[in-house]
Image (tube, rainbow over all chains, first blue to last red):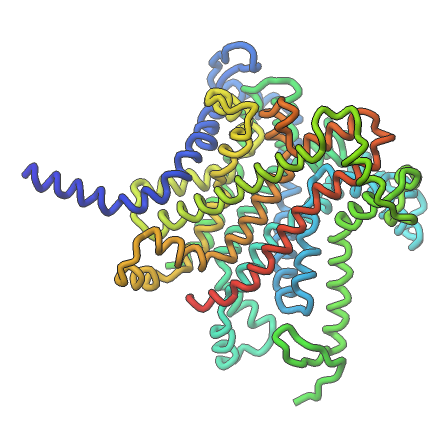
Length: 302
Length: 294
């Protein structure tokens, strides 16, 4: 009896051994530097902690304050939601379409480089360019072009007028973040099978749109899933662009995002407990949407 | 059958095709969008070549009128007041980033292979943790992370810039998708032939993951090369600071006299990311040969 238990134990160890050894180095680093800090952050969200004194436990008070007593946070959630709903789908569809077109176009390598260029530079180098584009005077590139076309008589105050701040952030963000989704789609497209395409042509696929819908997209489901999660996380994590465009705090909080609120409390006011609560809420948003995407896209896998 | 009109052009596969008017307009539009996307790179190049007076034109101009290499000479030879030469910061960045990229590629692919193609205890839990990690804002993790890195005694060493940056949820998720596309029959056949797991991993799995490895290399190189926040909180020793912090040191100080050096430094900071991309892009395209295994 004991012998068979021992045998089945060693059998189990054997079946798990190889996989575990492959996973272990990554897993240990992941547990120490990602999972453990997340758990600490969840714990901190239920405390009052200013980095210098011992955290003191206050239960769910931070969350209560966040939703009941913090109007600026509600504004931040609304801004982030608008940003996500607009920039997420546009960025995703644009990065896929450009990958698809460029994959077939002549000089595809050069075009791929040009499209990935914004993602290669650091945001510090980029901010100079944005300020030149959206400068709120006659000399800003966008205003200058609109003047010359006779569309406006007075410069648009792109980064100081609350009604345009979010628009500018969305445009810049799509420009900057399209690169990673674009690359993943391009790598996926290189891997789509030529035989399936030919088979499709025999089966009556006539034009590019049909090929896209029936042959290419179904093969790219993993890349699309990755693209969606990438877009969601990017959209809910928007901050540095908002900071460069509109400052902190921005006029009327028009460029205030969830992460801007988090940064404000964590690194300006040093209220780490409250900041941690914001990050937990942020996490719940993105995790929920990500789960939906996974459910929706893998249900067909069967 | 309609007769195709338009210009003759050579397609990528070497065939001669005809470029219709519609396609030509599409190509022009693509070129316009691509030019717009590439503006930051062009701006970085022109700024590095601008003589001092052109850097302070108002309104600023995009292009350079009388290009000069003086900025680079200043940066490497004549920047006084810096405790550490610029070349040392350059070395720090190269060493840290290359080490991180190699470890990221090997450990991430190993983990993805183990999770997808082998039995691993709690594999569902592990995958849930990976998904969770992808969706947590990096900003608050930084504080608990500092406590951990400090506790391990890695602050003020290269380790602080390397070890915590290896296991990235995002990367594992990306590679996992590609490992799933490797057919089991392929691996089984190799096992029948008596190949060890390590041989299978390095001889079959890694080569068939080439496109995603190239993508991974580009992503993690760019992210770590440009990372400003991690060295900011972990490195106080001037000799260990990488380029983004060095750039900050150069641009603080006498900012007007050094504006040219900042332009040159920006150029040198951006150049390797473009190079690694161009280098890896070739592999992404070459690896099309492996797509036959599906």
